[in-house]
Image 1 (cartoon, rainbow, N blue to C red):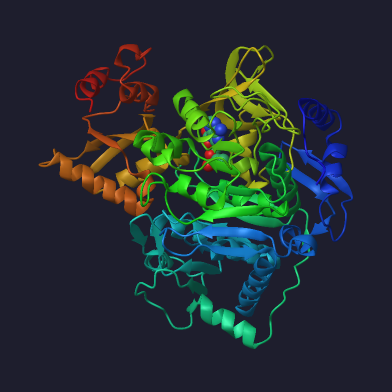
Image 2 (image 1 turned 180 degrees about the horizontal axis):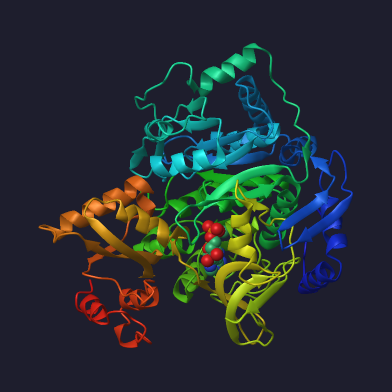
Length: 635
Ligand code: WTA
């Protein structure tokens, strides 16, 4: 498609057009897609309610854009290449034609089980091609998918299913990840005890571990496929969707205890994911593109499935983890498939960096042209290691800043076009109008200053609402600063006008690129029988970026503190999932509170960081002795 930016001048031209006439700019891009009906109006918006409508009046189906239209000239080109967890298991390739067949068949399975447009479906699956097929099959028939990452606990899944009132769950018996297999269906069984809205569970065979199958509710994926084949339900006409019909819900953590369901809609999301994919990575026909994210997160939605497929790309999907069977696995995959574009997370880079160069040295990485990073700030050491040892100093690194809520990449170099700088996401993409705001809400005009990162104008991929609670969407993103979307991130703009994200300014911790709300973890810790109160903060962690540090008050002294820590960890694991387990748990007698009873997290953060000399103003504390006690017993 020819909306490709090829030079700095193209970028500057596109950027200024996108600001001076956003509607004409996005309409010209949207013209490259397949529509059942074109829009009446490109953009209608206000940030007050908020109400954002892109391509109003247009009709389309995103799967027609991601699959059908490529059948003309790319039917036999690989759409998805899949590499199994176990390097000895044969990889799989699905051409666009095969993907089309499989998506249509499974869409018919959904229909045959009574799923209708607008129904919500929870997907809890391992990273196998059937996960992508399930997602696309939902989109094909207009069902709204809510993918839940395979590491979440039964309780977390139940909360998400109940919030979205899902009618169906798609899962697998189990999943392989590294040396472990995870009992996915068991976890779903536990979750469903709380979820009467779920009438049907479709279960893919993957690990073939023994599982329970409940008559009338649980059905094997393979049997259901056979049924529709027997009925001759092979093709499946795509449902005609309105531009602003909901495409998916994806839950993410915020400052409060309850995860919120970020809602994306069909047309704007599609245009934005595809446009940003094409430009940031400079994808060329026949390139092999490998994004190491999990489809349970937004990166997997936008840059394993929708963005690449909308552009007719070949997207590589990997079931396993970077360190299994050893820390050379990513490089083996790059070598095996001659990967051209690699998109991964700083945590993975740091952990592979620590494993040493022995795992890199005999691998042929010469196919690589572009490297990407996402999810958390990348430190200079990791950036340089990635650049020198993986990119051999000839692959531009695109450090892409964005969020579940933004739908696609917002600030990033354009590979080979924008001059990169370690730790900097550099410049906003066309259509992205950034503003840095100080504490008082005043816009900061000059360079060389830090502030809170806001966006003052809509872009097509932006969040439309939080599912079932529009007021929460307004409160979270549009109230802090009037008439602006507030990202929750702090950011520096340097003398060159380059942006560097410094991290969250709200009560969200970014652990290995995963967002975890401190309130969620506190709620889980407080469920442990002996806990009176707790406070959770993030602290710098060498590999994970941030780790979770918990201060916990017990109702009586523990006989075995180590064991109690393990019990608390297990409780968090049960309530949220293993990813939210605190790295460090310090038992304390009291928490630093203001006279009005508010916990002073700033102080706890400083202590967790080991910066006890600079606790700042403690004069508003109710009981300063508490701080001394915490400092003296720091882990
Ligand atoms: C952080 C992930 C620094 C940021 C796509 C943001 C980053 C949160 C970067 C969103 C980056 C993401 N540099 N920080 N390149 N990319 N972040 O919703 O704090 O899982 O607000 O989306 O991750 O996380 P989410």
